[in-house]
Length: 447
Image 1 (cartoon, rainbow, N blue to C red):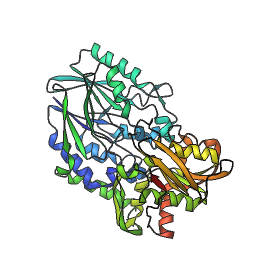
Image 2 (image 1 turned 90 degrees about the horizontal axis):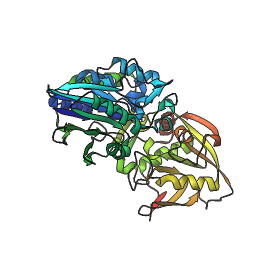
Image 3 (image 1 turned 135 degrees about the vertical axis):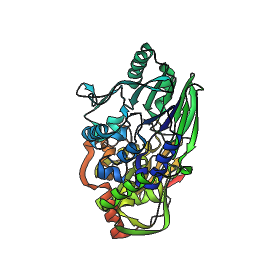
Image 4 (image 1 turned 30 degrees about the vertical axis):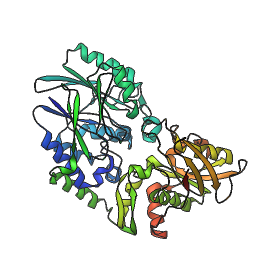
């Protein structure tokens, strides 16, 4: 029997053709001997996700009819009630062993801790776990509790083994935590997500897979052989009905208003966003500083969503797709010493979704020196002058940065002095007023 894994579809819904090809690929690979599985972040974020609170994913789900799925941190972007609504209307069984609300499993009347499904005469037991950092990563998930995923998975896997299933699979949205999970649990495979880097590997004899993000690939997992095969979705025949449904949603939302244009495409690949200074990062940070009058602006790299280049006529949808979150721009007041500490945290490698050598910040009003090999950052100038440790500076950033303990912990909620407009609204207004023509200026110099 085979498992067909997809994960982290996220903002690919804003490209209806790509989702049509993902659906086509899953349809071509599917069969009576296969089970379709999703490993989180398959409803959000994105422009259409923002407008529909994740319900645009139902266009894909109803077309391909997945068998089982677990939750990612972004599946709660619009709160537990919206996530529950998607669960109600989707065809797959949702499994979670570590997400709780008010002392019981999230949506306990709809979700399951474990599920046993059969294909080609093989009984496969499934459970699912979500990164416990979700409550910190996602302000809309604070009503939820995330238990220790390894302990929860160990208990669930033991129960499945006791039921005599032929195979046990953990659907994981832990990212880099998959290695510890695979080493700890008695599972045949850990099918993962959360991190965009693709993976087919073995850890202590357990198969560990990850198909990457954006609906670009499907992994065909062979549990008996303990391996997986990658299928590029771009080569698949497009499921036109899915693409058509998503286009209709985009038109109905009025997201095609043109607000500007760019002569040179704005790249927003993973390597661009996490590789230091970039034109798109400068555009976002400059917009924050323009809107607030702050001394410095800071945008976390992971907050800007990757995707196809923004080029030619730029629509509202294009700009919303950069920051598809209902979160305001916030202004914090920091001492110079505290600001220095915050900017040094641009190379924090402890994040569950981070890779070695990633740079996690885009700035306006500051000049930084980055030693990639040493993993260090030095602050050269702030607002054109050497940083004064005893001075007070205002910093415009995303509301998320003040909320989370995971990124830039030197910036805290207690330092908030103002709250502005929603991030994507700031981008739209900035584009209308000033145009879109960012350049790389030496704000982050690699040494």
